[in-house]
Length: 368
DNA sequence: TAGGCCATCTGGTCCT
DNA sequence: AGGACCAGATGGCCTA
Image (cartoon, rainbow, N blue to C red):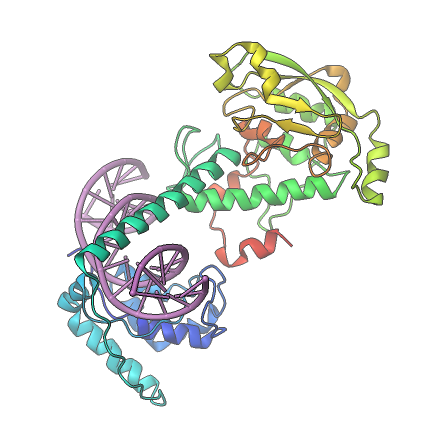
């Protein structure tokens, strides 16, 4: 047996009672985290060398309250084997700590599923997990990958697969960065140029650093990355104000005239084998929106030079236009996010790969 | 070898 | 009643 197990429901219940107490408490919410620090039950759990106990007492998890797990079935049977003594001990202690727990009528134990239903349930579960993994795979393709590396959980190269948790963290950071760029026309993108010399472009408060640098130097830095060269294709990007724009957005857009620029982008890897003329299928514009045709990848891919701007266009105006156009005028087919997919070869998110990220900050921190 | 990550099986709970 | 979802348990694989 790999590890000792015990009945965690008591501790789980205790932790949840100390927190919000809501039945569906978010796993990442972190609510009630500090309350369990001095929990004697948690301390007992921590004193036992057991991964699951560590998980149970880890303050960053707040699991939903569960009823006492039935001691039948495969997992429970295994749990009740080697860990019977520790389970009993913990139960005894917990009952001492909570003498006021109301006695519940024992629920009639549900009959175990038939072999057939168990098999079908397993198949459904596998399918469900496959779909989740597929969604993770899509997400991986849309978030910038790290070019740096280090640390157990960080990919040491762009070829290394991001873990699920790292993918989620990067996605959150990516969304925040994109949101910043969209909501703030004068968004300081200097953190991108800093990525050359220092991958830690975000401080611990998840704030974008504000190292001053000119837009030209931004591009200079961005485009001097050591990346895999790909055939460059000229593309004219034209962004016009959408009809649905808010007044402030229109105002900001006016400042950005002229709203077009010539850029060259590398041929997406999936197009390399095809006729270059196929690129026309990649970028389509109806004069109001820029659409990315299928297949939707990060259009510029990994390890590819993002885009080769005409030096004449290397000014803040164009950059702002590019970053500012997403919600109204630049639209990419899902699941791609990105004009900023062009930045895949940079690592403004490197800190996420090296530091602990508080799950409890979660999406509410980034999507408000 | 320990620890992280993952896939799978499983039972409990909720929802339709 | 049956499916979806969730979380615990377990074992395999991989890396430092």
